[in-house]
Image 1 (spheres, rainbow, N blue to C red):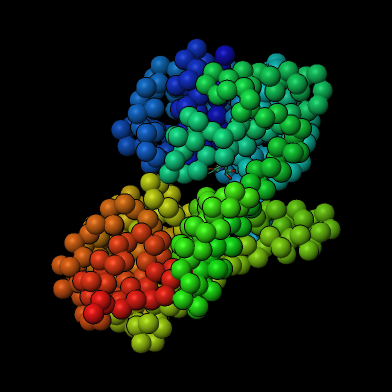
Image 2 (tube, rainbow, N blue to C red):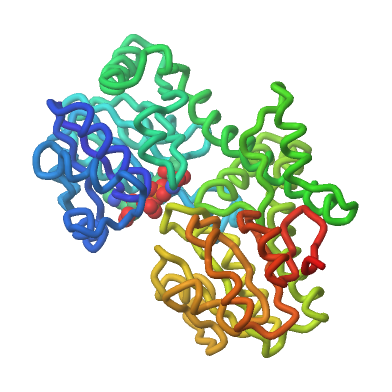
Length: 458
Ligand SMILES: NC(=O)c1ccc[n+]([C@@H]2O[C@H](COP(=O)([O-])OP(=O)(O)OC[C@H]3O[C@@H](n4cnc5c(N)ncnc54)[C@H](O)[C@@H]3O)[C@@H](O)[C@H]2O)c1
């Protein structure tokens, strides 16, 4: 069997590497129109950083796993074609700012239709609006001379930073297909691929629309938990309650559960915001403005939380940070990834620069060029500096802001750093990962998320 995947991004690369590793008799080709990305997949420095990914890629690359720019060749020879291209939020036209931009999905479908001969199974791996499979069917059937197509929905639930564990041992695999004999047969073909390593009871099969909608709803529910606890973090700061204690107390209730209750400077990543906006657009489209407004508030609280974080810095630094130096530790949207899409660090850095601060950013995995582009676009601003270590960022700063929960930030030489800083020296822990008691004993004024601020001990 030949499988190919259109799109060698954060999803296409890792998922196909796992399929190739688990199914040695299947040839898996990952293709992309981006030559630079493919060159990196074929090099020692992969374009995606994920713990364990490099090892899995090395296991199969050149044997049954191939990365190529020959999109047409891969489409022609494959029995199963995964579509794992980007589906960003539309920037212009109808639905701008909310609806998913399906141009990459559509152009992939048109290419498949043009080239395909004989039976092909097209798998939607990208996260797309409900009923996209129907549109794909129409495009495929209207444009193909001799192809026969079954479209399946197989949304990906991996989380960046733990992608390889999530792919190795997922909570579930979801496959949606047409409720016809041919549809059921196609579903079974894909079930058989996953069944190489995933217990059958974890592979859920549904109709197409349930599968498509479940992905949007899963992300909306996860983001909602973060916005819920973040909204409570503000109340904790105001009342003297401790958000970690509240999260622990409510999380012990088995009806609520303990996961995704970590307060922070706000969620980021390429998916949560865009998928919720997409959900709200669908709700509007289907005449359900109240439902749209309910989910939209999850995004609004997240934006508010990011700006609230900077506002707190300004307030505590005596209402001005103009000309003051702020060390920003971490830029990726979470630890163990080099992905910066929608990271809270973008909004925080922009707010700090707008206040006239000098901002020194350090991230262990994100290159300087990307940080500059994310924060400034094509502009320049000499107040933004990207440095090579956390200590370099902190030395001489008025305040330290932790924006990504990288483990290496937990045990920096805080006493030395404190000595180098103007006093009072501040720490704003946007991830609640630093040893707050220790920092206080060193002399820092510490401002965690969702906890009363604490001055130095004694
Ligand atoms: N990133 C995540 O954690 C995550 C998790 C689950 C689902 N998803 C969904 O998976 C999809 C892909 O996400 P991603 O993060 O991998 O995106 P990405 O931007 O990292 O990768 C998409 C790739 O598709 C390529 N591409 C575009 N058009 C193409 C075409 N016609 N042929 C071949 N390649 C083409 C692009 O060059 C790009 O490299 C999105 O719909 C996203 O919502 C992402």
